[in-house]
Length: 409
Image (tube, rainbow, N blue to C red; front, side, top):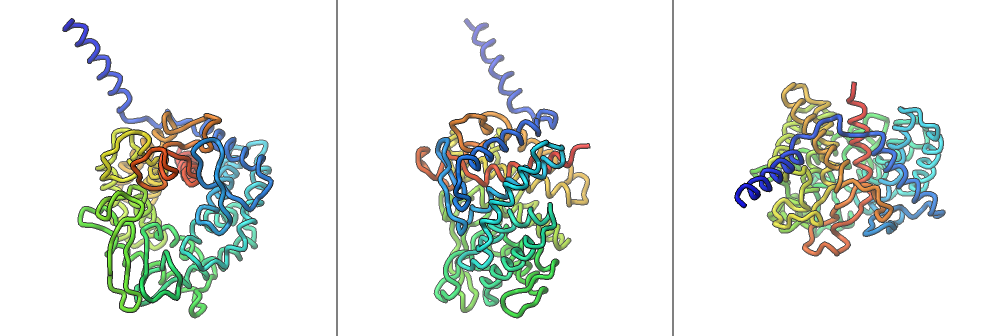
């Protein structure tokens, strides 16, 4: 009996050691993964004649949809641009079809260039028009991007030094900024370098000043001593003083919402790439080190790092996808060979995890390829906010796959 028990334990240990061993780059089948994502994206396009209703979230096979004004709307056309980029790079026969699809859905977002009601124009417009312009140099895409940057800049208030995330620009009682806003700075920096102008005085330089001011204050206000992040910081709009720091989509005000942490890693890595100011890279790496130090063995975080709910249903693989993109970016822009190698390894291990079961699904019962995502931390796995499909998960997974594909010899 003792011998049999020993053998059982030995077998289990060996199985788990194989599962938890570092994942090698050769195990990532990029073509297969992209092809599956493309199949799911195409299925939605073919079954939805209304090109003004964009995929959002799904508990099963059918996406709920949102209008163009919603912050998630740009991820679907953006993911199509990524498929087109891969298709062109690898000479797919239907690459022109993907370009046409991406253009059609992107064009449906055009009117949002004038949207000043929230801060998410970077997500909405740069993630589709930005890729469209990068890949085609179509002038009308550029025009939309420049107006989008001007609209976004109207939410900046100099007394606070940051872009208001939520609320009306006329509200002088409270000024709320969220860590996600770091992801919208790319639109401003790009526009500053491409003839754009700010809403206040028509200065292109002001767009860069706004982005830099926002990033600089985010470094001060959003990070705890251990380099975990707050989700929301509330300011007095008149004086710029901090009123409150809290977490809206995580477990508690002093907990660390995992996707918020990845927005910080990604956003500061981008700001280093745009400005070459090393303090941004240092901040990105500090945030990344916190993420990696608290990461479970399967490379996918819970919805909140302070959560004691460990089952798959409480994970957020979309946070892992964003982190993977950020790690590839750090590795690409960093000059330190040891740091470059460390984050290349982290990126590859993370990508291998989210392109494998249980996080990657070819099931027709799932709207997305990336599964076990969480919009918010929640204790009920059946709630719409958790254990779900999210369109941005597949978007960032596509970005990570393209980054990995480009890094191969």
